[in-house]
Image 1 (cartoon, helix red, strand yellow):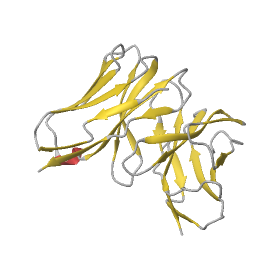
Image 2 (image 1 turned 90 degrees about the vertical axis):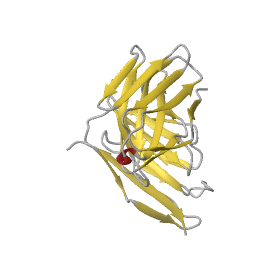
Image 3 (image 1 turned 180 degrees about the horizontal axis):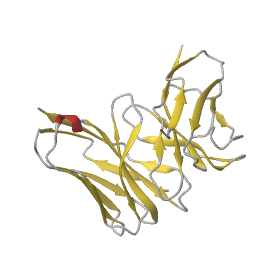
Length: 111
Length: 113
């Protein structure tokens, strides 16, 4: 079945460490997105990419970085500059004229 | 900047009742509006997508309406069941469409058996 795969499901970060969250889609969608969700809050946009080798900052990009070297992959790195990284991270893709599809998320915690 | 508000924040009703969840947005220049369901610790499941030119969409017991000029959408759930218990999120797709969604904070729904 077509869909979005996020890994790992749970991730722990030590202080000063960078960690990378994986997002892979086999829907052949051009656009991909990263959102952050905090308890009791709606999702907020971190970064998005409309095409390979191009991406734009969302509302809360500070402390995060992304790459889009392949159409099907959009990894998110949470850097040590992100002082409050504990959250639920969701990846999505969009093929135009359709609903956005979401992965099952990665829960990031601090050790 | 687009802002999305959902009312109520939480709702608890007995099984079998019909109910309405409300969503409002500040900028009427939208591409589409989506309603999602989120179960605890899970990702989002798309329920209904309404394009900006449409007034409503229906799927089974769910009906979503859109009034773009007043910046409002409602999600109507008929004959509620305990399995409908979840958080329901409203999200607006603005601009040219490939930008990200703007989400409300959600309505946490509990259906009592």
